Length: 130
Image (cartoon, rainbow, N blue to C red; front, side, top):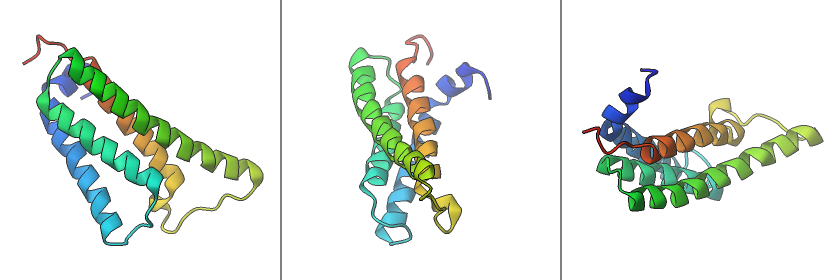
């Protein structure tokens, strides 16, 4: 599981998982489980769009370029949201959201990891792997 080939061989399954994560996060927004956060909405949308590109399992440079533009936008938004949490920490204004696992500070960090992983999987795709 910790070898790069595992992720390339299962890129379509990972794409489906990313789409399900995106739809699940949107469902929580639509059902008012979480507050409507524009940062979060961008991140969950980009995770889903990159999931769709992962379903293509293409190594074409256009797919990689589009994934990079979309992915860097989503990662940039996640970084801005996460940095705002660090600013609140340094000002002494930070407090955890209840329940803590829905805290924007933690979720934006998770989004950064997910988005960058998706980009690496898409952009380092080798055309020789089926």
